[in-house]
Image (tube, rainbow, N blue to C red; front, side, top):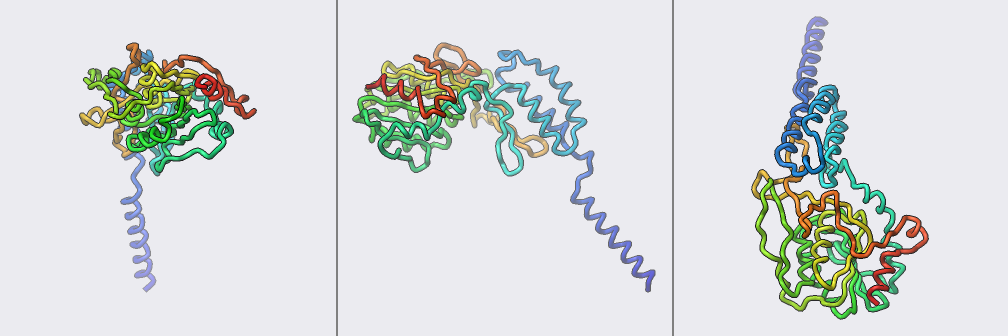
Length: 340
């Protein structure tokens, strides 16, 4: 009987080990090199700013392939992060387990200004609570000087296309308006257009948009069909204003009643499109990891891309972290004085 039990025990151990071999992939099955090659090729094929940024992408291939060969397990995420950071592009990200987006690079102007603004300090200039849209994409109210104020906190989804007209209805009788786009990471093109159209009394030419190296023809932006807000407007910007926030600022700056105040924006001009399929920014690597690589870009009206360059204010008002710690928002104060 003992021999039978020994045989059964040995068979059960063999069965457990066999099952584990079905679940745990052997080391040689990792897809680090395949992921690296997929990223390198994707950037090489579609990324629009290798030449502009003077990046020697070929030489980086050798360096990072060696690192990928040596990486074990999650060590490859460091390799992935460092490779994408070489592009110095605030739009590029990769996703980790759980779906969180990791951005390997932030513009230096963002780091300069990220603590030079506070919504809590802004609230000190009001005698009432700010209103919040249903989606929380914007806060707005009327300052004691009968100056309207809108903080655009989110350009994602299509919330502003529905909510911004109602905001403007509430603020239509103010003698001036402040649009605060400081501390903005970006979002959708449609939301930027929804904001700008509220101020148009005649069509506005669309900024040039290049996709996969080809210019995409766009019709001019048309007025909303309701009376445009014609009183003076100040747009507040800083180094953390980015992407869709920059696009909104650049388009508004073309209007005669709009003045941009603050500091130069972060400089994020890369974009992508859902059509054609090869222009989609987010791709799946062989391992299943998701990475975003921009496939196009938008130009300023002067013909320069705002990637790295950003959007400069019409009136520069520098604000520091020390100002905020002292409860002072110099940029907001200037805007209020400008519109009085």
